[in-house]
Image (tube, rainbow, N blue to C red; front, side):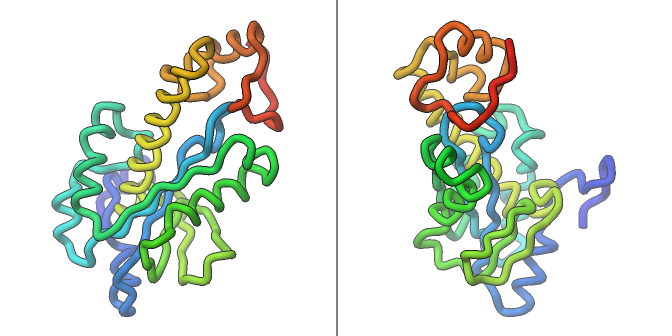
Length: 210
């Protein structure tokens, strides 16, 4: 395990992946999500399966929890993650699905979509249980700070969702989605007060006053 920083490792590593590898489970998928707390747009999940050796840690030495990285760093590392991974996937659940299912179930749905076709043998998540998926799994507290696979997934989820929100900004330009990505910033709340919700806003989420 890497040295602790503020009670957590400064950089994620492969400690938890190695536990599965030693038990013969070689295709370990790290899973993380982005957009769970936004007021608009989809929730996005990504799954990343890294090669079962230490070379991945060297190739992705700058990857951390996406929230600790700048947008430029995330955009630079995302293609390297895709190149290094044995397999990776991204899945979305729409605002409509979030309203119908609830955010937790919708996040699980996005994760299941990200895993489609990856032939994963075990899962590491950022404290997300996926009971409908019959694979060995470990839900880690601060998983994106501790597991390199989960951290890599957090970067792919964040960059994929940011791309989607920039696309949606072209359809709904009055809200500023390209800037705030659907989160409840003062500018977003002011736009909501003026224009009301559009079809990609989550109708079941409470909007704080501007």
